[in-house]
Length: 273
View 1 (cartoon, helix red, strand yellow):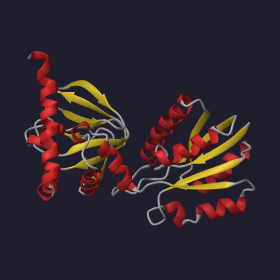
View 2: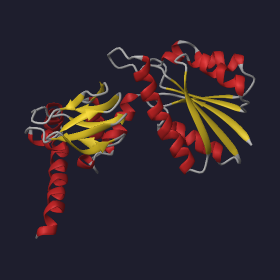
View 3: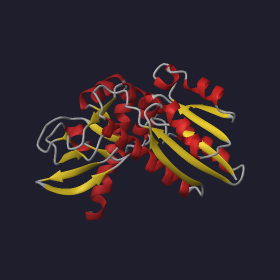
């Protein structure tokens, strides 16, 4: 049985890395040890070690579950924020036939700034594969393409909306949106989880890939519930103002959105007609 050490954080749940792992599965009996250095995310505020660890654990749990569902033998751990030291520690207790290191493209990656891949190649006498995964923009495009409200709109329009979006980060207990407020952002959870609270009662919970805020996003009216982060949470955020700006520049997108909203209204009314 071949054993693989997979080293990743921000790119861990991306399709590019998962395809690489899938290629190894096709080669025969294999086992994967997923190592997630608790590197603080790049977005704007100071992360505590506990918060960086919580986001890393969230990604680790999701990717191990996906690998097991695909038939792989997989386990993992959240490790030292210094990726090189984390790899050294992993090799002290186990043998691996290959290391797969996944990073974002060169400029945003602190691991590449620290010359991680070259150091790993020099230090460990096993093959090293470097996977360069999409930057945040591609991740944002992928997240937007899963939003039901935007289903079926052209890829060029998704790219325009991604350029108008941003990544927001929220600490444990922070209200991402507040019931009654008139903010008009649409949100897609990238990492972490949140609860939906209406009139002091938890009515739902969201996780990665879930979308919320569509009603106020479209009509600018008050929020019907609060959404509160349960642990550190990263979201894609697209404001209604930015969305309408993109619509003004793209009449075809505006027409497509009218069609989508019309279909959704029809689906809501069909049971009572």
